[in-house]
Image 1 (tube, one colour):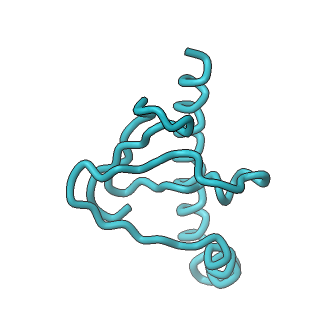
Image 2 (cartoon, helix red, strand yellow; image 1 turned 90 degrees about the vertical axis):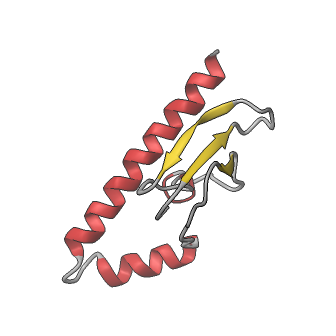
Length: 100
């Protein structure tokens, strides 16, 4: 996300908040890092004016081919690690909700 703040609601369809996603954070990492991921499990609701860039999964892998083995290798590594960190954070939110 470029600018803004989103509230994430849980995958069970209740109004239970999982957490907030702020500027510079990412959404949808599970589509990249979870092999069995098929359907979005959370709902994101803008809490203020927000600007989001969407990269579809197939385009993500095209970008990987272009950037991962060239002069932007370090940039690609940084982006993927940032996404992994956000993925682990949201996964822990979901786990916490499931055991409560």
